[in-house]
Length: 469
Image: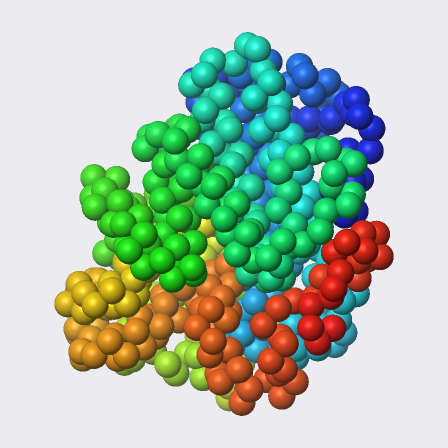
């Protein structure tokens, strides 16, 4: 694969570790995000991981890559936008011929630049994870405590990146080495095997990490973050009891996490419901999500929420009031996602991008409980989310009704967040039923994106291409 082989073309490669050590950084913790910014030199890989400060900085670059370069980015090429168009959350208003329009119209081809970006960005990050894991393991100077923490974080990031890849592309390679000779000839694994590897990485990470956050901010993975991702993975695998157990860990940690009673505070950097966040690169900056989604007057330049989606909210739903902004333009009104509100560099950072949050855990547990026959427990979890939104208890009573209620709440709670809506349609088998009427070009094979054409040319072992492309 190009994304991997370019990164390790020599056996004794000298890796460029691009580090900015901010004022106040110490081996005890890192209050400010350590970012790849201006290079301070090329450090032999063997030396990087012999010092706690540089080893920590190298691992922190993984989070920066998640935020800036991979599918979790809040920018135009992230899943918030692309899969919002691909599903039924966003309408497209941008210039013709853009990648986003191809997602919106379900006219994606294997040479699509955004598809290649999703694939290559993810595998570049996975390579970085593997480099860190190997370097930390080989280190002679790092303490076992530091080794466990940094390796656990790298394993978590490797797992979450593969998780999104397998859900976008289906069968994929699971890469666990930096060895060029191995990586250049990898083949795609069945999705079931990919999931086994994801679970292995997360379970190992869980043994290495503690419940504590490294700093007062929630910008680095700990055992709670691992449990949050595990609960989602188990949900997707229909391992209902396991999903319930992991989500309960988060819900029961009431001294650490709590749903924000004021929904306008859900996406602030101090949010008590945040399990894992991505911090903006520089002090004073806020999220890309706000600058991408918000506009000040109509018609929109790029996108707006679909009116049919906005109409799905019940009267009085505080999520609509707090998380959707009405924007007039003449006689029309458009709607913008308003979860993130700080569009400019205000000099003070107020919002961090949410990767994992507590509300999802309640909805995971509700779905898992419904499938295991605990209908009262499922209703209770649904009603926690509804009550917070200012709504009465759900009238759902049967298993089918409760599962539909969970689906409805997930749609309204998690909209424009990392492709949740698309993945829910895909895993429930309802993508065709829902999208065929709103996407004229919908085909059943659209449940998977194509493997980038350039990757197939570089490595024929990745064949066959996904059906329909």
